[in-house]
Length: 341
Image 1: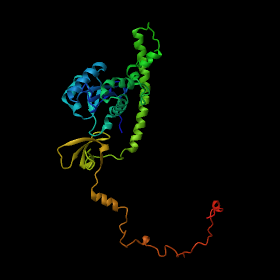
Image 2: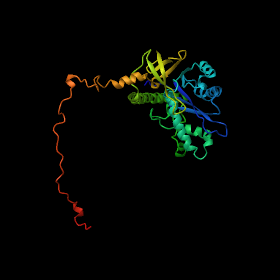
Image 3: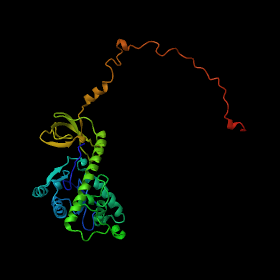
Image 4: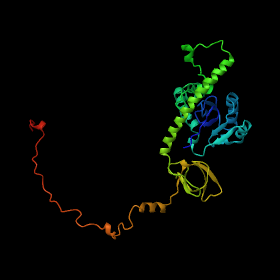
């Protein structure tokens, strides 16, 4: 496992689309999710459709216009993210566009994990009317960004802005008094110092969490690496349960990373695919499987021609023992002694 790391805000932002959900009176059915890999600050915007023009418009007007352009924008290979309009937007703001391999949602794990959290929170808040989820989305995001993140140990708001968001409960309980005579330069200096301390603590916490996750992942991961010209099976998601999920043989034509390979089908050699090692396993034919099953048995097994050291010995079972009837006297249990039939 090679975790994607980030060392400062907006260095890497994960992008994903959640849906389709129940259509709201406003016509919304999807949610555009943008998660900062470092601070975990997440923004979510309702969408009427998942067309590339709609995604690019929301990305520009509601995210980049308020937070600035990220250094790197990571997503899956959905058509909404790989369209020309999105590529042009990234080129305009000098954003590096990266993508995960097909059918490997772990490659965009930040946004995928938040999608599950968002669905759980929306289902609770919209229990009475599920068609109003777009009206509750902003309240869900306020609650999420104000909650301590397990990976960083601080709230996404503190990590992103160097201060906590003021909530209705803070107003009711009385927020801390601020120094009205504080000058802007002093405020900037104190905020910068506070952010530096928070970010340093976050880096240590994130490194610890990533090492822990990598250790757990590597325990379950398939051992062994593939080499160029190796033949492999490729996992292909199917619509029905009776469809085969492994297709092949494919040939490894290039190693792109520790767990990423470019493969080509043996019969359809014009097209190549970039896949993650989680979707690959060694190609074994039926003849290889039969030979593997035969290997544990010696060549002389069942032929009667045993090697000299393996010749069966006579009388290995020993003398026969005569079976006799037990002479033990049977007695009823003590609690039945006073029983009268």
